[in-house]
Length: 170
Picture 1 (cartoon, rainbow, N blue to C red):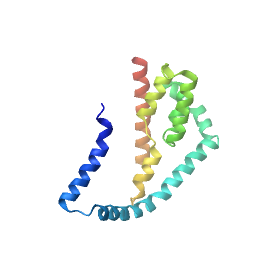
Picture 2: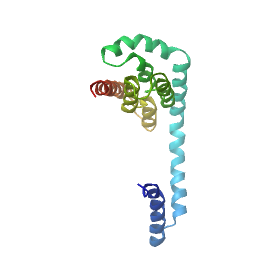
Picture 3: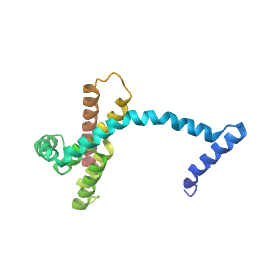
Picture 4: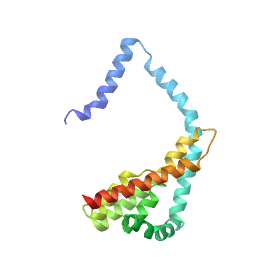
């Protein structure tokens, strides 16, 4: 395992040597790539900003707490512990918010408890759906968002249900 930290430097050195041998102007290629990235960043930024603002509003307004309270009985029927309901609801919107909730769950229940294991598995089995969809659909001209959002949220929920089931069985 002592060689693992050397992988990235070796890859960079190999790329540099390959460019020298092939007489490729590496710096010019790099700057050309950066020039192509600027329009992409400009097209994606408004969608990312909107998603970040909306996720912050969802948490700070108290709507997240109300939705969590309302959906807790449904989650309980699906085998999701009520203690991790806030994590399940915040994760599709905010990665940092869900990390904070995961840390709070660890502090309250411990990482080796059933709740801690279930929260870890749920955190790892789900994704920040709205962030990824904002990045993906930023480059699309024809946007039909309902079915991709629905499919992603259902897949997220099924992943959490499966994760909690595995935590219960194992």
